[in-house]
Length: 85
Image (cartoon, rainbow, N blue to C red):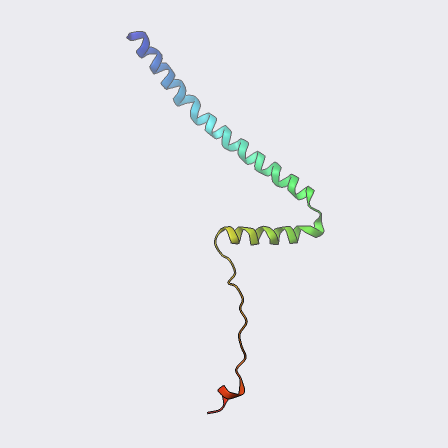
């Protein structure tokens, strides 16, 4: 039992020391990959299309958020009969 308890304590200590460092490293890696992705996207889209791509992206995000535009419907103009009283 002593060997088992000793190994368990060593693994717990190792996990307590290593896991936070790994999580920090993972966060840094994600940030660097995001920056690289943005850089590559900026290079891939020509300057004259960037505003249109940005507009489409915003429209897509709005639709995903449930901000759909209401459907337009035709409204009848008031006739002469409704004007007379």
